[in-house]
Length: 192
Image (tube, rainbow, N blue to C red):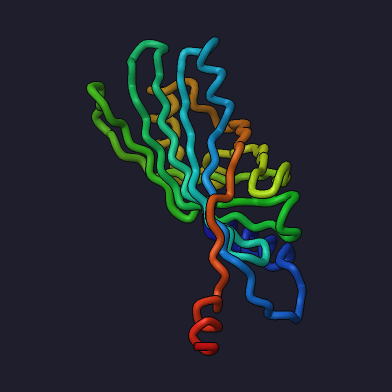
């Protein structure tokens, strides 16, 4: 895992925009939903995934994806997955890379296995398009357990929820619902 973190930090440092300007940018808050949940119509699972995000400016964003997978292939397990992710995009919109800072997967509902809590990691490669002002589309490829740090947990979860695979394609449709301009309050107080 240490090698993975070092490689990620190197990629992160090379992908940050190189600008000497320290302009303050607005912090934008968004919500998005993965429309790939439509595959529940023909598969043995329903995977609902919502994300809350905060764009901190300069290509750095924080995301809180919450997903719930209902497996109907036999055991009727329900898997709740909550993560805190760091997203880095060198050009604000366009390609980005993401890594989970922390992630917990736990089984909930009437069928709870012997080991209900698991700590996993994900690496995300994606692209963000602004389709209309305030609306975006974000296709991404999620790679679970890239460093194989918790192979027993991943195997355990995958055995109980067979539709949860190492690679997953997501198509988020999102809306930027609020923006806060840093320093805006201070400027108003100076002029009073």
